Length: 142
Image (cartoon, rainbow, N blue to C red; front, top):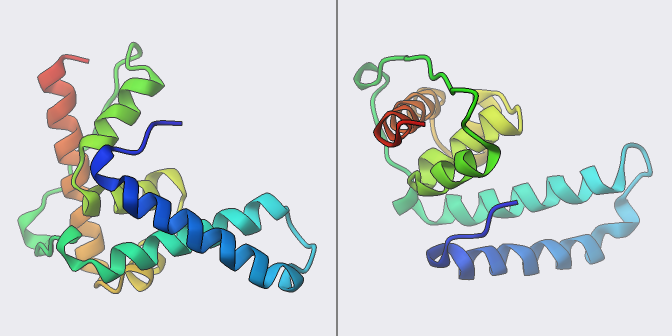
C-alpha cells in the first residue's frame, strides 16, 4: 500500500477516525452476510467520498466534449509501486474517480451519485486521468 501524500495526511486521518466511529456505532447493523472486511471497507470508501464531496476544490468540471478517449498501455517493466506513485501524483479529483472506476470497479452512475457530480463529468474526469497517466508514463519512459 502506498503512503498518503503529506498534503492529504490530515484528511486521511479524519476519514479513518470517522470510519472507526461508524464501525463501532453500527456494528450491530452488520448482518453477517458477506465479509466483515468488505463491510468495513465500504464504510471507509463512503467516508472518504464524503470528505471529497464536501471539498469541491478537488473536483474539476470538464465538458465531455473537451476530453477524448485514449487507451493507456503499460509496459511489462512498470511495477506496482511505480504505478501507485504515478497515481499519487494525479490531482485528487482525477485520482478519486480513477481509483473508484478502475481499481474498485464502480460504475460511472454510482461514482457520480457518491461525489455529487454528473455522469458526464465523471466520464470526462476518468478520460483526463487516463491521459495524464499516459503522459506521465511516456515522460518517465516506463
